[in-house]
Length: 239
Image 1 (cartoon, rainbow, N blue to C red):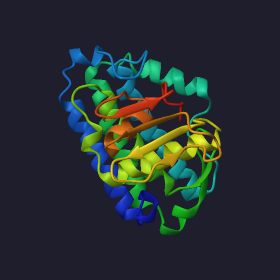
Image 2 (tube, helix red, strand yellow; image 1 turned 90 degrees about the vertical axis):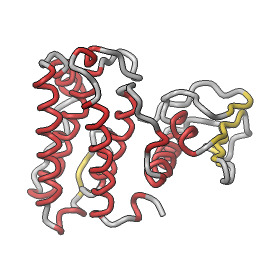
Image 3 (cartoon, rainbow, N blue to C red; image 1 turned 135 degrees about the vertical axis):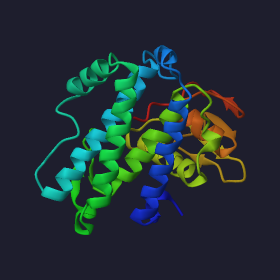
Image 4 (tube, helix red, strand yellow; image 1 turned 90 degrees about the horizontal axis):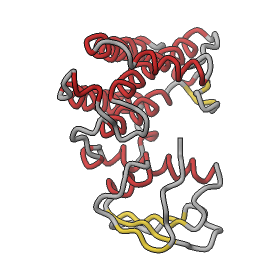
């Protein structure tokens, strides 16, 4: 069973668990350490916290769209999104933490009060995909769990629930396939069958190991506790 096989209330529970996990990691970062680097090139922890906060606000706009039927995009443009994060990174430590707390509360309220009939309403993501409003639970789940690791202060993919790891791997491989990336790449999770990213391509190399390690690598967060055989370089981009 994957994340999308759960009912909405169960999906939201996992998203909230991820939010709590991110919040815990953030609480352990001192104000001065917010200036430190993350696992994302070019972004400080300030940029990352601003991004996670503004992501919640953007998902609120999708939920408003679902509830009202009035198109409300996540962001006005890619440039506006980038400018918002850059400006958010200049906030004081207290204001940055408040941004995270406030947007989390707003998103949770939107989820709690969305009419049952609106969960199936079609909205559009920042990548241009048309999805039901219920997809916001997965979008936020992916965001908070992965970026908790990106803070670089002890978060681990091994802390994620298995259903999040399995769904992340399905998501990543699915995106590679849609973008025609990863030709010849074979992924093997311990105890599972090998998965060819592009089934019609001759094998070039194999990545294998525990589920958390394979997902960490596939998500572009480094090679830890796994093996790589053959001509495998960096993983393809997925977002």
